[in-house]
Length: 162
Image (cartoon, rainbow, N blue to C red; front, side, top):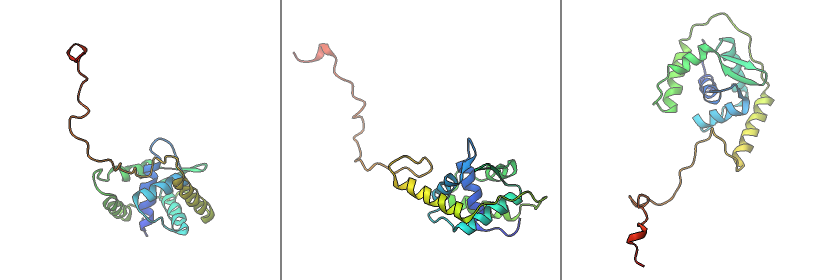
């Protein structure tokens, strides 16, 4: 599959993250991209990546949602699970560059406006107080509790002073 860009690997991996149980909406894929990488690529790069991945048979469209084909799932399944996101993206990009070009499939046609509205919807959802499961959870800043503090049992009634 030539040429391969960073956005191709990013779209493929974020679609795999977002569409575990059901096909993912465009805003969910954008949330996956933000989880993997701080900066979201431009709308035109994302449109080109969706089309390129669909032509090579790695991505399919279900009305307004997207999921991986079995070939795309196979590429993502071969990635090391304990590797960092940057390493996984690098390995996936290398794998995509060696992916054999088969018979061309139908391309996914997305407007740059659709991607822009999905990015705006994701940013609006991130600013709200609702929970977004694809975003990393903040760690609590509570002080370190003393060990054994929760393990104490109340004193038995017969041993208490009366």
